Length: 180
Image: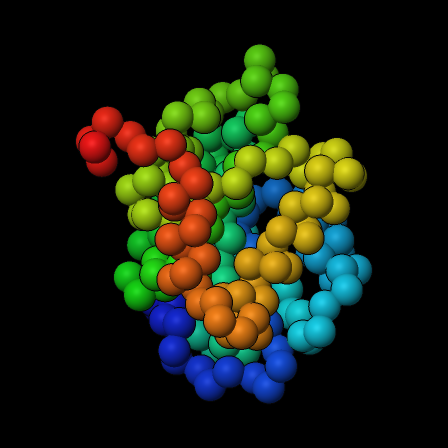
């Protein structure tokens, strides 16, 4: 069993790498294409995976950000993400992991309740973003946000780090009763 660790590899010069993990190949590919179209001073690398662990025989760059994509229309998607989380080192959860829930626009068709994904993100103390990736405008906006998050996590934004980003995203959420 191979566990992903954030500092296993040396960083590439002016390179930022994101790993999108999810079962929806077509949506992930469209999101990756939208991210690569964004204007960015860094060289962006987008890797897609259906699940973790990744094959150990493949050489890959250092991963700066992992986004777990949960389709709210598929219980399999949620189960896949939950199983993949076991293959991520705990230090990745210091601002370099996020969750993206898609399909929330058509709530009547959802087989996974929003609160389930909210609890999952809260358990791992990671940011949760909602977006309907099937709508091109929303996908383009999410691509912009992910590119900005990736630049911060890769250390390409002076004065900001992944931990700063995590604390900024956490402070914008409403506190839960157990946090009060």
